[in-house]
Length: 269
Image (cartoon, rainbow, N blue to C red; front, side, top):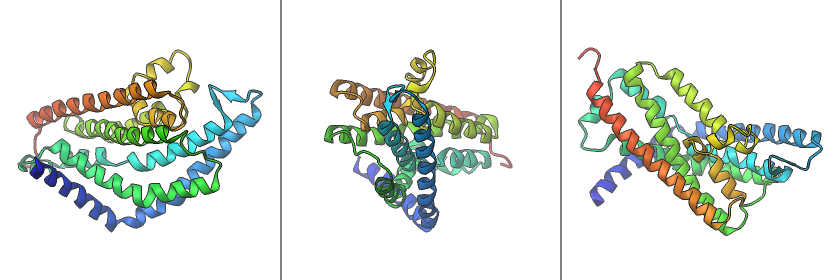
């Protein structure tokens, strides 16, 4: 067991070292994320100033500004290009080398993604968060329980996002070109997860549907836990639902990988 942990730890460490070689790419992301937060800050402020109501869809101005700012901070942690990387390996046939390794392909890729996210957390998420808190009127977590629940939920959101990206990346084995699906996945996650707009802003018929989709686990759940909008029992249920989606998507990913192995054809050999 310890040998297995060490092996996947090596995958994570190698990804950190690889990210270190491109550290300026992450550092440049700090002003970009600050710009995104600034744009959303002024958009939401204008919306609320034009509204006769102090609350819209259950959010007051202070809550929505905090929600929008923390959303970008959360994204800076969980985001990765694992779908594109897997799709390219499958398309080129490089995935055959993974078949020869005595490691689990899915766990190895998740370890690599976590290594990149850990690096992003140190060089992008933390500096961006510090600047956001200094520049904008962003509230801290609604108590230490909300903060702890948010931290755990953030880790689960990373797992859910990875599993979704993993499945999309594997689709290259069936489509031979997954670029369109990767772009569609990115748009779906940003819109349907509550990242760009809280789910309560959606039409009444759409909101209940969106709350049962896995996309919600990526942004809506951690952000609302941060704001303390759920009590202890509701928070535990949401964390359990996140974990259930993470496990369910993981199992689906294993089935998809077996199907890929059966259908994979390597061009030129």
